[in-house]
Structure formats: structure tokens, C-alpha cells
Amino acid sequence: MSSKSIAGKSLGGGAWLGLAKLWFLVAGYGLNVALTHLIAEGTYGQYQTVARAVAIPNMVIIYTVMFAVSRPLSAEFADGVPNYAAIRRNGLRLAAVLGIAATGTMLLVAPVLAGWRNDDSLTAPLRVVAPISIIYALYAVNIGTLNATRRFSSQAMLDITMATLKSGFIALAAGLALGLTWIVAGFTAAAGSAFLLSLFLVARARPQTTPTTGAPPMAGFAAALILFTLVLNVLQSSDLLILSSFSTTAALKAETGYYSSAQLIAWVPYSLMNAVALVAFPLVASITESGDREQIKRYVRAAAMTAFTLLAFMSVVAAAAASEVQSLLFPSAYAAAAEHLQLLVFGFSGYSFANTVAWMCNSAGEKRAALAIVAVPLLTAIPLAFLLCPGQHAHGAAIAVVVAGGAASVAGLTALRYVFGVQPPWMHLLKLAAAVGAVFLLGAIVPVPTAGLIGKIAIVGKLSLLSATFIAVAFGTKAVTIAQLKALRRG
Image 1: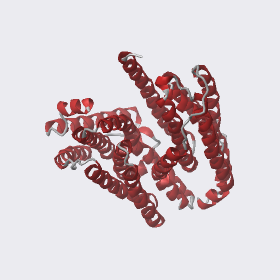
Image 2: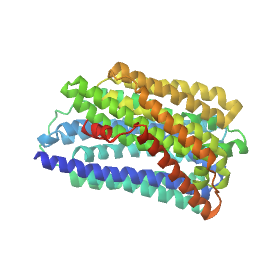
Image 3: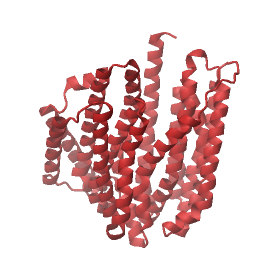
Image 4: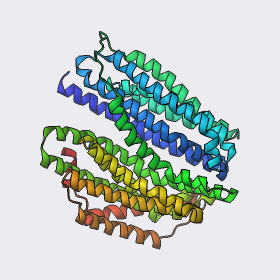
């Protein structure tokens, strides 16, 4: 295949996968906003608790299996994937082990988890979503296969289908007031439907190869990836899971629902920054392979500055208009979580920066450094949440996140210095601080109405004004320049 056709396929695949990721994000957030209008606050908090409980094992499984299958298949793509069948068999074995273990464990411990959260009614919903683990594991084998064989449009179709079915089934059950068990059953039904479609797409994509028995083992690579993704996913859900364990009254359960709505907004920068990480780590890997240390330093420094800039921009706009953002997206009662949003958005942005640096470390072969970076905020957030939540409940959880986010940023900056030899960009951070200060000041002195259609329009206008202010100050102080953007693009 010519270099032009490879480039064209890569660009086309990137467009397809980018569209799928955007749709997944929009559908997910749209569903959660809809649920706050369709079900009671306490039920919404319960839904988030169940969703987060299964997200930890499921995300670990799907990323581990997907990359464990995609990596060896991709390595053989130029040779026609001679070990296609053998690699997929290994992947299915790995999927079966991880999926059955996770599903069986959830079925057994569902009553224990429900009791820990002081809510026995969660037992049935937790058991209904337990099969998702084995479905996701098998689904991940097919996703990894499509990715490795350059069937990007099919991979994107699966992601879009999964997001659409999940949102549709769950929203339908909520709209019909069928109860929490039926609501989360929509998730299980969506996963099963997407898996059936993946079987059809993989059958169409099967290459014509001669079977061999030389498939590389997956266990070592999978074990390292399991540990890393496990820490990442526990970090993402620990605050809400700990908070829900202290929600012993109807009022505290409602507060947990409000908190989870703020958490959803605060996760937007993290979710969008995953795209930066996905772009950065293969580029770092290719540059590392060349052995050009100075080029690595230039690219990593540019990537870190870009991450800081984007995170500062998204975080401060949300924080400076926290009350308005809550009112724009959720029922009026959810405005009670505005103060939590201000803390959470900065804490999760710290997580995001650490995640970006950790993936670059993984790309450079520094797996221990990558694990250490994400372990620092986890080991900070969990004890703090257990310490603060009994007395301060949701506010205590938010404080734990923002402190852990600060620790994550320090860990990321430390890794830049000792892994890549990149000094922290202090002057760049000072310039960004000026932009952050300007946005906060403007947010405080420009109140807007929040009720009715006029209020919604006014809120959008305020968010636009705050965004324009940050951009103006960032370019005015040269925190961001066209030259920097071009340098990052070139690597």
C-alpha cells in the first residue's frame, strides 16, 4: 500500500472515530440531563451509583482486551495478518476469564455493595447489570479486531450504535416510570445488541489468511494494562462511590444526586482531553523510536502546554458560571451543587493532566512512572473522602477531589522533569493564571437571569463572553501563539 493511501486511510479513520467519540459524549451527557428531568433526585443518585459500580470493572476489561487484541493484529497487518485466528482465540480466552470473573463477582457481592451503601434496593439493579462485563469483554475482542484491520468505519458504527441504544433504552424505561431495575436493564440490553452487531461486522472483515500457531502471548501486556486502567477507573469513580456510602437519609441521597450532576459537568474537560492523549501517545512512541531526545522534549513540552491551556480554559469557564451551568442543564434544585462544581472541575482537570502525561510515559516505555502518576491522586482522594464525607458529605467529597487533583498535577509536572527532562512551564502557567483571574472576575460581576427561555439565552451569552475573555487574555499575554500551535502539529 502506498504512503498516500495509508495517510488517506488514517485521516479517514480518524474522522470516523472522532465522530463516534463526539456522539458517544453527546449521547451520554444528553441521557444524564434527560434523567434528571425524568426521575427523582434520589433515584438519579442511585442510578449513578450503579453505573459507577459497574464502570470500574467494565472499562478495565474493555480497554485491556481491546488493546491486547489490537496490538498483535496490527503488528501483522502489513503481512496479511497470518495469525488472525490464533490471536482472536487468545483474545477470546482472555475475554472469557476477565468477563466471567467480573460478572460472577458482581452477582455474588451485589447484596454486600448495596448494604455498604445503606440501600438494599440496589441489589437487583446491580445484578441486572452484572452480565455487561462478559458481554463487554467479548465485544472488546471484536472492537480490537476491527481497529487492527483498519475497519475504522465499522468500529465507529459500533460505538455510535452502542451509545444510541443505551441512551434510547434507558430513557424509554425512565419515561415509562418502570423503576431503577428496568432503567439499568436498558444498559444491559444495549450492550447485548451492540455485541450481536459486532459479530456480523467482524465476519465481514475477516481477512483471507492461512492459519498458523505463532500468535504472541497476551498475558504480560494485559496484566500491565489491567493495573494501569484499574487505577484510572477507580480514581474516576471513587468520590461518588464513597459519598454514596454515607448517604443514609433521603436528604443525603438527594444531595448525592445533585453532586453527581455537577460531577458530570466537571468530567467534560477530562472526556474531551482524552482525545489529546490519544493523539499524543502514538506520536511520542514514534519519536521515542527515533531516539531523538531533543525532539521528544520539544513535543512533550508543547503537548503539556496545550493540555494546561485547554484544561484551564474549559475549567474556569465552567467554574466562573457554575450556578448558571447547573441551571442551564438541570432542574432548578440541582443549582445547589454549583459550589461543588467549582471544586470538581478543577480537581478533575488535575486528573486529566496527570492522565495525559501518564499515557505519554506509557508510550515512552516508562510504565512504572505512568502508574505512579495516576496512583498519587488515588491515594490522596480515597482517604480524604473517607475522612471528610461523614461530616461534610458532598462538600467533603468535592474537597477531596480538588486536593487530589492538585496532587495529580504535581505528579504530572514531576514526571515531565524526570522522565522527559522537560522543565515545568512556569511562565506559561502564570500567563494562564492571568486569564483565569480575568474570567473569574467577569463571572462575578456579570449576573444573568436563569429562569425561562430568556434565562437560557442569557446563560449561553455569558458563557460565550467568558470564553472570549479567556481567549483574548491568552493571546494578549502570548500564553497561546500561532507558532506554538504549529510546533505541536509538527511534533
